[in-house]
Length: 539
Ligand code: AMP
Ligand code: MG
Image (cartoon, rainbow, N blue to C red):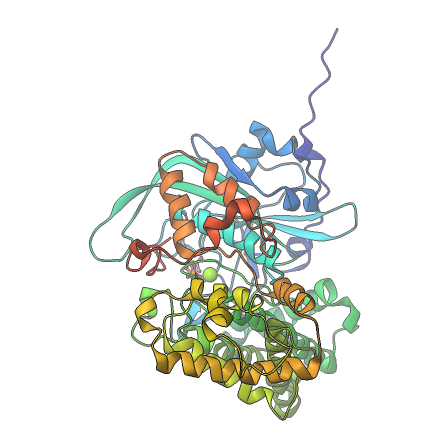
């Protein structure tokens, strides 16, 4: 009796690789670093690795692409998502793009260590592009090795999923696979190279097209490819806008301005600092993309940036993210200008960013404070004063907003309140108790009084305010030190904390009292530790 040939579940996925079939390919098929002209991508195979082991996967993302829990536990899954085997229907390629890095045009960048596997069409008819990060050299690798280390892969894997569950638009992460190989990195570019375990993350998003994908063709004056890519993007990802035309390019750009503004409002809401908002790291779909030296605000410091490479200028500091997004959109407008042919309409569309960001930011602040509506007579001052109070002493942003929901307000004026009792819930949010001077307390109290007035006008019961606030103010975020502990353990071969944090961060707004240790302030040891307070682009 002949045994039935075993069919791998991964070979049963449905692929529709439109990016490959509809857009111009690089004619050179040999894999060496070069300028790729007249093409949107190059065919390239992932580099095989010796011992792929899946150390984590996200079950929701697996379900999105049509894989079951047991499908993710097979050796074939590890082989495919380390790049050792292409499943039936996969076509591997690296995308060509350029970008402005730290405000300067950098020419061709491209997928130097990302290799796309094609687009799965799931049972609901949704398109999900799969992309391996760290799967080896491509024509865009320039002087680098095309690989990724475990450290940065853990950070990308956990943070993409944490952001998704926080409600922030983002690319997703399907899997984290160690390769069994060592990768050498000089983490702070200071002459201390070290071998680190290699890993590959499989990222998932409707598309990985970036602002820089358009910029490269515009910069080269290749309007034919620019138009092909814009038309492809609109037809595939913005079909509701209609057939591409000069007017449709403008409405498309307007939509990019809107989704980008919404994404940045979310970043500001949860205290996320991207760290490298170069135009090659800006998704055309308004998704958070490329988790490198990102960080989470612990104490509220608008000037904070986690990226040591950006230490002097702090271009990508927390408070500058909206301005950087706007600047990047301006570069995208320049790139598509040849398709539109007139400046005014693009300029107007660009204003949509400012308008949407302004409105959404106000709305977001109202929600964070549990207010029913924005009151233009008083709330600008209410928000400004709050941000000033948060900076007066070292105040943990996440804990402050979460605990503010516990402060008993909205009933009467605070004239006869016991101040100590009133502000007791907030004490967890302060890093340095000695900073809580009478001067600070009186500023805090003045702000609480102002806030209380608004709450009294709203007339919402305390429980309802708390419930509202807890839906937008997370209890759990991926604090920099938490990711670092998970990395330290993973580098010792213990991956349990990655699974634990993934599970925790699936419900960031829930109390999860048994996990309360993760809702605490950054410990003192993490204040100056690499990976916790300082990160570099080395990954
Ligand atoms: P990033 O700062 O990660 O957005 O990367 C900027 C550019 O450098 C992109 O073109 C990346 O593909 C490329 N790059 C980053 N790291 C590597 C690496 N290890 N090997 C090859 N290319 C890389
Ligand atoms: Mg990048």
